[in-house]
Each structure stands twice: as structure tokens, then as C-alpha cells.
Length: 114
Image (cartoon, rainbow, N blue to C red; front, side, top):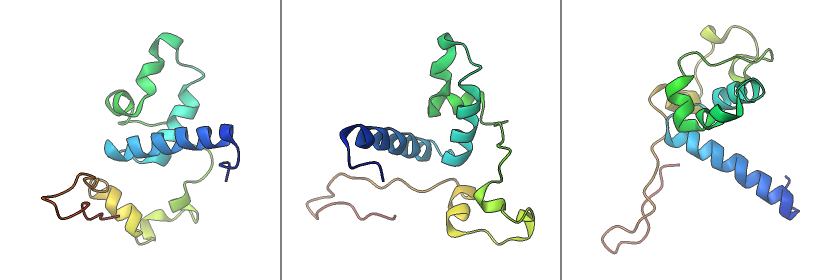
């Protein structure tokens, strides 16, 4: 991707950090990014902190802005008829469980569920 340069690696790290933070707060990263990228131009600079995932969930998650492009899970415009993918089922059920990265009682690293 863009990791072949230092600047590209920095940008990829920022995006990955946003996605992981969204997952930690049980926010669909797609909905978050679509909403934030539309709000950032209209929001006063003094309120830009409201666009962080934690505060965005409190202020805007109930009514996120939608893209005029179709969501990847709604490509055929009959999303209600499509079965949910494993990824969509996880988000419907409260998001993925974030694994613990600490060692458990000397048994090595915690087992990851993703």
C-alpha cells in the first residue's frame, strides 16, 4: 500500500489507529469515516475534538451522515434480502471482542479471537 515511504507509513498508521479506536468503541469504521469526512469541513475548529471516535459516538452516532455512494454491504440496493456476512454479524452483536495482549499466568500470550 503506502508503506513504502516514511510519510506513507505514517498515514497508514493514522488510518489504522482510527479504525482500531472505532472498534474499541463498538463503532462501524465505515460509518464513522463517512460521517467525519463530511462534517470536518463544516465544524468550527474549536469543536474538532468532537470528531474523535469516543466523542463522535456521544454526539453524532445516532444520526450519522450517509454517503451518496452505496455502502459495500448494500451494493445491490436490496440489503434487507441479503444474508449478513460474519463481519456484519459481529457488528450487529456489539462489535468484535478486543483480545487481551497481556500474558496470562505464565502461559504465554493471550489467545486472540481475530
